[in-house]
Image (cartoon, rainbow, N blue to C red; front, side, top):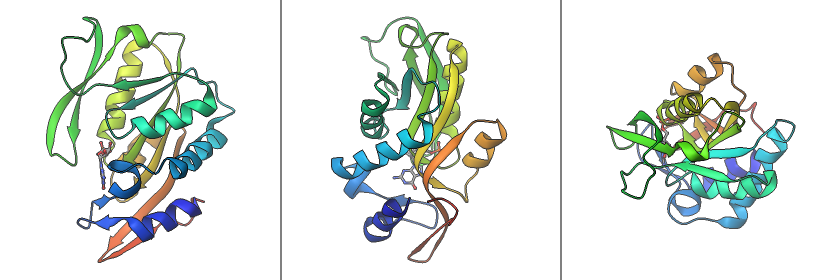
Length: 193
Ligand code: 5GP
């Protein structure tokens, strides 16, 4: 998506040859009008699929999931990373290794909010090694629901997640795919518009 690539080129901060920061529009400050356009693009790409719920992971996936949900007219469920006494006793759980925090954590979704009749679109901000996404796939599979596809705002194509998920046969839509971070330059895969 041209608009997104331009915004990344203008605003992203390169943290290392593997990590980019997009705090000015997704991960800290949220540019709602801009994310709204990304949400519409997710709708364009998945509108022919049956989707009854959008599933994401707290915290950074929630904003884009909510904006997309307004187009699909479905609820958003987000996996929780923190253990809370408020959470129902029956939950689906999975373990995720965090690429950015370099540690493993549990994610959980109450069994009440996913059921075998659901068709789930998984959305998140980044796809890197795919651990967060695979954790969400695991949770959907535990619930017996179907996965309609997965969408990411930014995929880092030089990491393994995209390959692993595509091999599993899912429709994966990433709005921008970073091929390489070369010094201070971000190089995109051109096939994604
Ligand atoms: P994965 O599980 O695919 O390895 O990593 C995905 C998660 O890690 C995303 O939910 C995102 O929050 C975080 N992440 C991975 N790479 C980056 C990055 O380069 N920049 C930012 N801001 N977050 C990242």
